[in-house]
Length: 123
Image 1 (cartoon, rainbow, N blue to C red):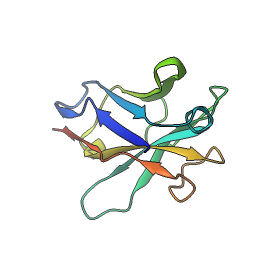
Image 2: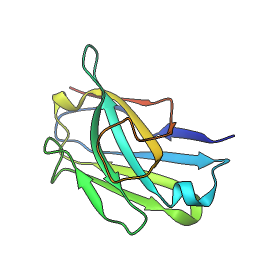
Image 3: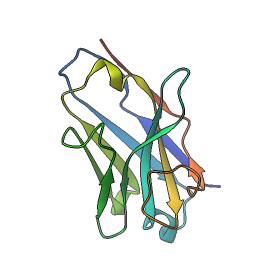
Image 4: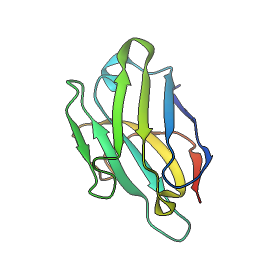
């Protein structure tokens, strides 16, 4: 049974930083070695892909977070990270990690596994 669990969310002031983690359990290695991503969804808005990473460490970012957010992974511990710097109020959302996409993409549909989300609030 595959499970993704996010942590590290919270409330911060504008300009602050947070580091989100996504721990994967019960996952077969090829899934975690594949394409993974971070998404966010604010109330009343569609889910937005913000960062993705492949098994070689290649990354893709949404323009809204480029230069401020960094996606990384620890294959040995099956953990995905999102370092968020210079946070803005418009970054307020529920943040989700996702795994097992066949491609490096910021679209949600190709991802097969999702976490339950962690809330980030920037004031």
